[in-house]
Image 1 (cartoon, rainbow, N blue to C red):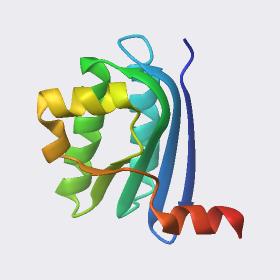
Image 2: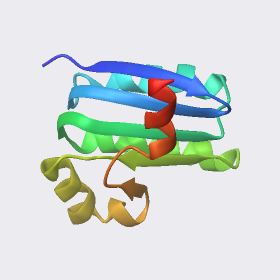
Image 3: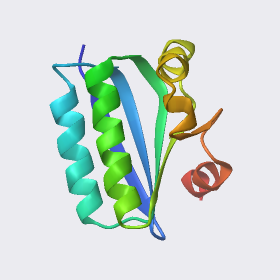
Image 4: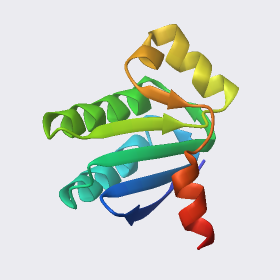
Length: 115
């Protein structure tokens, strides 16, 4: 399955919407998107995972790497709206206590989308 990544930035924050499956084959694409995004220097990144059907350990490692780089510069990386299968992976691995996990995309991103 194809992986689609779209990013919207505003006022030092970025919303990264991911669609598809994050696995061994698609993780490099996501990694390169994060590398590009983090060069722009947002202080907060929210990852909208509402359209992610599957994420394996390779995908989780990409997210952890991005989280580490954000924390090194005093920023935050958060996960929003993971589907049940992805949420279960976060819980089983204990990563739900490493990432800030939101049940839905934070409202400030939804409001800006409509304006």
